[in-house]
Image (cartoon, rainbow over all chains, first blue to last red; front, side, top):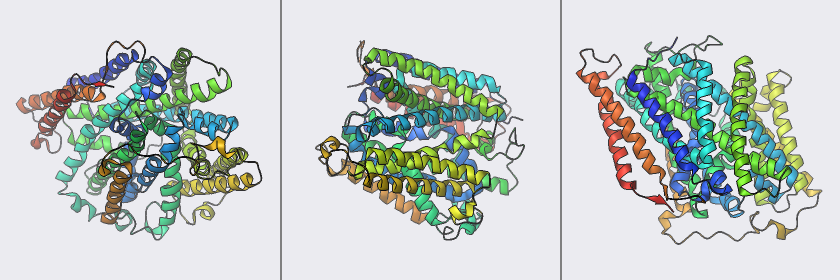
Length: 553
Length: 74
């Protein structure tokens, strides 16, 4: 079944990667003196380090494989997930939200919810985040094993246990700093290991224009086919893209998901923290040059009858996620093949490490310390963090085996983001920008938003709810369903929070200083030239975003 | 930062090490292919991508190594 045969040198390259991440973890262990060192990487990173880690935490191999395959199905529409579905939210986080996050000296997003609202809101979010994170880590682990089984013939159990053990070792040693260091190495490996696939594909097919002009119209534009849901493969209109993806899903993910925001918390000062997502936005915008171009190359070769996707080991159908590995097998000789596989391996492992490091922080600070031991010392918290790391890795392994046994649970777990993050964004938005928002409003609004999102997901999947009513489309794709469900969950949480807040007692304004806009002194950027200020860099990013959308309209 | 006996090396230094080592292995594999009587069967193998891509990785890695040698994070 497998398509790539590794040589001795390829194995050596993989070995160098494993040795490097374990050695780095071991090296960092001696710098873990305080809880800030372990859980916040000592708050000493530059904006560049934190920025690359920020984008890398999102850059798992599943994302790369999934969207390369997704491009074969949806065409250029996939770029929306990298451009309008990411950049505005990242810039908003850097410019408007980071001052509240960073200045309040919180350790986590649930920590902000405690300061702004109350303990129950914090614990509700901490538990839902911890469960979501560990389940996602397990799914990631299982799919990694499945991909390597299909393309290389590796044993599923061995892949799961070896990668989980390595992650467990280096996070236990160096905490968040280990995760960040390996994420940066992963970032370089992904560019060096996978970008060449796009380059060679373009060379073979005679240029990008040659590929684009042969794409069916339904797949070739970003906005030109978005007026009508039936005109594009995703089955969604521009309204769904803007409201569901560009606003709710994107802002919900990029501004409130602690896995990402934790990287910005590791920055050395507020200015660096604000620049973290802004710098990251440039790297995010560049990723379609690997993912979308790779997918277009695979689509074109398949159209020419020169490429055959591998079969899914369970469904038996052509598996789009294997597009990139098939291209690696096509273009990469010995040495480069090892590099390409290492890039995928690094992507998978860094993705899991990100989940595990976010899980150990939220569990230790927002569940363990909040509920069981408020007076814990630094050393005790680091000890708990290490134990929780190991527990998190084992829970991921259990989830991986559960997914292997009951394959359909993966659909549920992958939809968790819109259950948790979409409503949370409404809570955060109101919390940061509306002083009248009350603790009761936030708590019950969040619960209503999460329950309604879950209800819509189950209702559509079991045919109890007609998807056309929610999506304004007769044939919405799963993506279209996701976008609209996120929008409705956000709206329900937003409206419920406002209504409940108007009937309940708000916190005194003096308790909200530093947490709510209007009650907080505007942060003054450190003395630096205009072209280095976060606002100017964000405007440059926005200009590039607009130019890309116009060019590929 | 207790127990700290030395400064923390910057991540860019480690990036330099990894890129240099991996680039050298990629280039070595390409040279072996070049000298082999049986050419690689991959598409566009005639462009010897491993050779120049491995070279680019070594160059990038060495630049990172030299620029960050001895640097520590404050």
